[in-house]
Image 1 (cartoon, protein in one colour):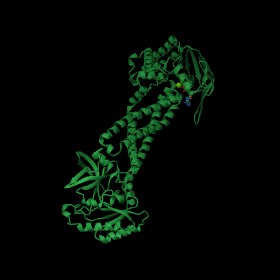
Image 2 (cartoon, chains in turn blue, purple):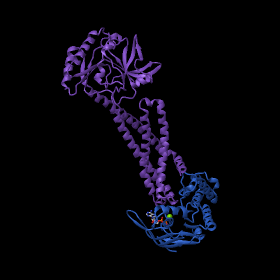
Image 3 (cartoon, helix red, strand yellow):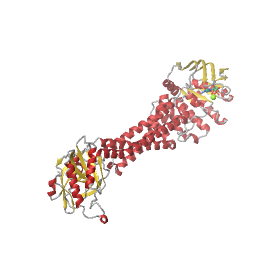
Image 4 (cartoon, protein in one colour):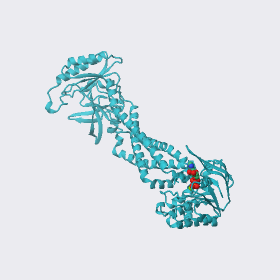
Length: 221
Length: 403
Ligand SMILES: Nc1ncnc2c1ncn2[C@@H]1O[C@H](COP(=O)(O)OP(=O)(O)O)[C@@H](O)[C@H]1O
Ligand SMILES: [Mg+2]
């Protein structure tokens, strides 16, 4: 359960102040598949980062599973990100020096889990995205679609209740995009994982339960 | 987590190799500085077992028959030897003088007679000097056992020698050295009559175990090699004018030979400077090197963190707390330092085989090793502190923003 109340986000740099989000009110229920749409620079990533606890709102209340996160310290935020959330990014963000398997294990390094168990979970997650045959490859040896599947495996390896995906198909051709969309849908339908996805593609947005539209930092639908 | 770090370090071996090499070399430099520094301090704190205060050193360049190559031998030097004997007796009788003794290579003179002798079936490196009966009193050397030379020894059927306890141990082990046969030169047998504590011939920084032996030198012997230095112990507070007087008298007796009078204190100052100058230069170079390495290391580590901002942001997003990232980066630094130091220790461990223990004591070697390990670990961790602190402060949203 994600709740945003009167959220503002202001970016302050030396010269300019950008009001990236203004008065956002939002409830996302468990098990929903929500898409966020809007023109470039309207604040979609900012919104997703706030939900993902990667950044803090300038104003307003944000609750995750009923926990008020405004006052939470770095440690408990990190713990919540690790246990409750999974991230998928447009540019995959895999560590190039690590194998597919090691990349997928990263979230589990920040939990108390034995190495053997870690490997088992990572292999299971990779199996889930159909990459069991590529576990010892390095990211550069994979296609874009395969890399994004690794990123999804990494997002779900810790069995989070929420997966946040920021334009996960943005760097992929449409066939690969369909594949990724299929995996996210399966996650949502089979496991009941809440999925919040930023997309530019109307086709994918229509396949989600609900679409939030942003324009210039405001919620327009 | 350590395995994870090892994998990262291994995959980035090209960038890390440079760091490892840097740490490795600073370890070697530090090892050398600490080892030789400790050795110098330990040597400095050991007793000299002689006393350089209130000693004048008179050098007279009397040609010595035995000291010259055959072609240049100018014949008999009995007249010179007799005159020298007279001069010594005259000086000894002066009220300012406590004792006078002749020596070929006195302390701090920067000249030494040393070599490896075969004796009692052993090869022993030793340092040698021939001294007259007044020498021990002039240099204020006390004995552990036995006695020093005396004029009556002229009548002995052998040449008496006094060894220091290091040489006694090297030659005779636990046997009583007194009365033992030392060596023979022609028909002359040499016997040990006294044992002194370890003699630090070149002063405070003399290496350990120089294995000193003093052979009795008597001017009564025919065609003797003339002692080049006369050591004169004077009463404390004797004015510099006395040096003038000695010099004048020497000139009267030996008008044709060069001569000079110095205080042993001045020779000491000079000798210590000669030893300490390279040490000081070495330390400055080492300090400079270490500073460069520390700056370079911080720079490279800092760059390393900057280059990995995205990876760090990603780890933060995936659940690493700020101080976990901080610790990971420090862990990587520690891992690199460990790898470099393992190589360093392997290299340094070969040095005893190459004979470093003849230059420094095992204690200085150990202190050097442990000290350098601790310092380099400390230094690399110190260099890693700021970069890893920066890494811990990376804001995930910002780091992942750069696409
Ligand atoms: N870290 C930041 N610092 C300053 N301004 C930012 C930062 N991140 C985003 N912005 C600005 O906030 C606005 C919204 O950005 P973003 O959420 O990335 O948009 P979108 O994802 O919809 O393209 C933009 O004007 C962008 O320039
Ligand atoms: Mg965006």
